[in-house]
Length: 206
Image (cartoon, rainbow, N blue to C red; front, top):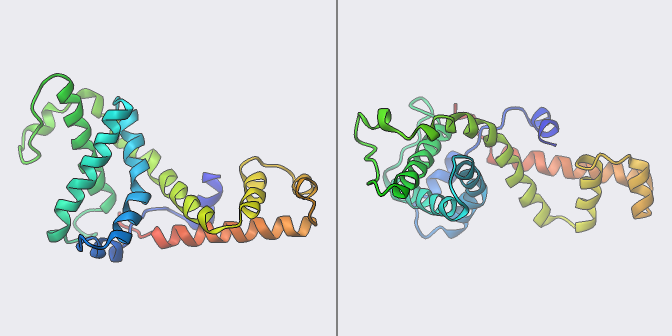
């Protein structure tokens, strides 16, 4: 599924400048919910793969979101300076390292400390590779979730059986007792909706 959508839409490097601008307003709850829905699972999964427990990973999600909120009032996005992807990764990585240090009763590292990088926990060394691996998948998952909420459950099931379960169209048509043409149409329309949702989230920020 991930390969199919990546081929259909190209490189998935999200975020939208307009969304970041809206996040400067603390009262814009829909935009903050949009941001959370899009990125929380990415942050959580990276924290888990970074060696944290579920509770610690939840704390990383919360603390990363709080850090983003604190930066937003003065945040100026400039893709020439650095990508949003890298910026969010750095915020997440520091929160993961903080959790690992708390286990040992050590104070959190100060990101302004120029020598802190050399003292990072060894378990964080692979986080960059993990982040890259999870980045596109998390955006695809977010797009699918948003589309699924808007769809008739039957149409999404048809799409799911065709694409994820890789059932032949004839078998899907038989299961749902519909013409095979409706199966192809549902698959095409749902795929288009997901691609459009990805484009809505997408911006080349690298």
